[in-house]
Length: 162
Image (cartoon, rainbow, N blue to C red; front, side, top):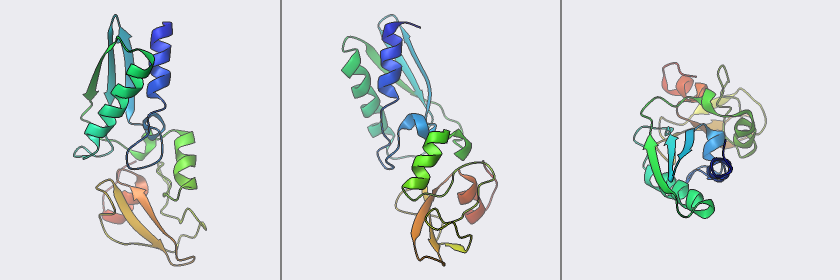
């Protein structure tokens, strides 16, 4: 791998999601980064196909690549495929739990990320954005979100995903 490709990959790996304070890399949105000649191609898979933040994600990726390779043309392509909670990295899962999201992993429950209680209630199919499902904990009173596409969200709104 070239020094340029290493720098571009490292820059893209720092780009944060516009709605959730986690990197796109850890969220499993970054699928591929390639640099060929003077062209960088970054493939992203949105957490929701109709995600309204796609434009902002692409802008942030362009900015990150240009910060380390100003002369490189940047192409952001969208992989139109289902994002799953299992796409989140181990570090990403820890970040999500620390900031109050349900565990996105396969087989994960909707347990409260604050107190661990399974005594929770879904508050509907839509949260503060199209990619979130709201929950409340009956034990500690906390509210939190699960990312749509995660096992916890699928259990709350019907269907199986992971």
